[in-house]
Amino acid sequence: MKNTPKKAIIIGASSGIGKALARELIQNNYRVGVTGRRKEQLVALQKEHPKEIYIKAFDCKQEDALDHIEALTDSLGGVDLFIISAGVGHINPNFDFNLEDQTNQLNVIAFTLLVNWSMHYFRTKGHGHLVTISSVASLRGGRHGPAYGASKAYQSNYIEGMAQKAIQSKLPIYTTDVRPGFVKTAMAKGPKMFWVSSKEKAAKQIYRSIQKKKRIVYITRRWILIGWILKRIPWFIYKHM
Image 1 (spheres, helix red, strand yellow):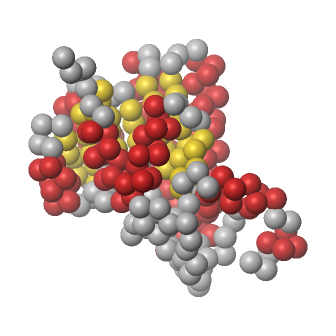
Image 2: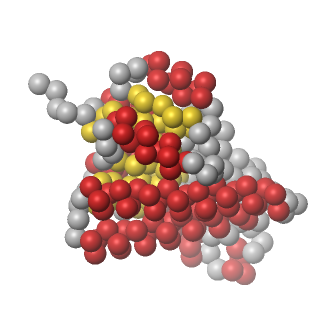
Image 3: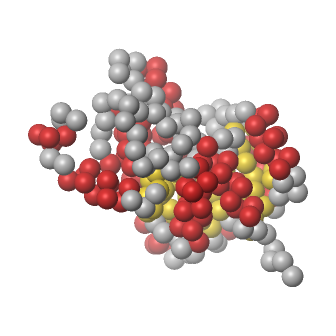
């Protein structure tokens, strides 16, 4: 007899890692609510598994974003796993404020709202798992997209604070900070990309990390080495990179 499905919401699943994660979770007995701005892409994903996928199209920067999330939660009958995969980044050589602001509005302001909602929900429910997709770029500032690296650093630090709160609550609430390197998605931008992972490989590694309740995971694992090096490059070298 098949076990009762667990329930997950993925914020930002119309494409990229979020979409691949939805497929991975369904293969592992999850019922999944997916969100995104592009309804047609969510509908196409739902057609693959109409009984397991619930959709809600909205922009998580809009004022009624939490109303949509709560409606989706009700449709699922609750949430055990909440994944924030929505994010944006711009190559911004001219330091255009509008591009920096777009990045911060989604990666910082909307992100904080979503984390806050999910942690309150899990505390009320008594258990749950929050997963956020940050980046290896969170480890250092970067001239190509200053707001992107800074916003991802904010996400990693914010989720670490939530991890502390979860531990002190003494409830079975877990957090996972996923730090991808280069993954073959529309978000992958940069003059020199290497060790590029497929979305499907990234999703499988993320799912295994969720199962193991890891607090921090690099995707793919070899990016642990890059992270270790990045944090140790002295400024007199790093400033010329």
